[in-house]
Length: 345
Ligand code: DAH
Image 1 (tube, helix red, strand yellow):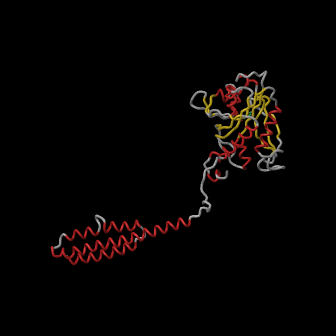
Image 2: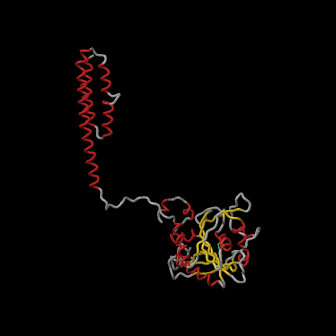
Image 3: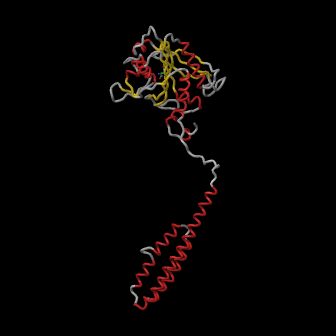
């Protein structure tokens, strides 16, 4: 019995020393300490065995166990000091190696969505021309989306834009930002010049150039003696500014929109080529704006005296402008969370 306990004492001392020696960190050393010196550790277990010995044997083995304990504590403390010191050395070295001039690894940082960027550019252009920025609700009534724009109930022009009707009578997701026209006319003193970018919705199948949700902008200018030449000058200046080409010319074709009379479509010369490219589909012109002189019925509905005042309005797709500017091939990318796409801007 005594022999076996003494053997265990020797063995415990040896394994403890090896384990302590092998510990590479404070954490590992702590594991060893718990296994040997902890409350349920090896040393406690040996102490328990002491109880079974005769008084004489106890006198022999007791001091041996005490010695073992002291020795183990010494070995442990020595190692602990050593590990703490090397940890400290390592930290000091890190501090020494820290180079404040080093450039950071490429971090993933957020950025403004291409929509936001282009809307800010557009707003800057129109603000520089004296316009204010207007906004309107995306959930609209048939009244603002159609009636105020000279599209009465049952008029075939309602089918020009496929509408998402809501389950609430006469409520819909606006199909164009022209809805802002009447809101502004009802609340703003004349003369007025507003620019209203925002999201619009169309209930139609999607493809590379159509989406069910996209960005439009509406412009409205009302004053005394506003004529078609004011509209064309404004369109030209705006298109030259957004495409950053002050020699860009525009072309005007007749177009039908119920809320303007006469109505026109305005094209810009292709900013990328002189003799036809893939962006202008070899036509040298890019169709961009719907526009015209505000229809007298529209002025009347909003309570504006059409004898005194006239105005022009125009609308365009912001996605389309961005697609042309940045050569983006698929309109659906704007609403996607495709990081490869988004990171480019
Ligand atoms: N609202 C029209 C559309 O969504 C665009 C438009 C055309 C706006 C002519 C206008 C305009 O103000 O005069 O297709």
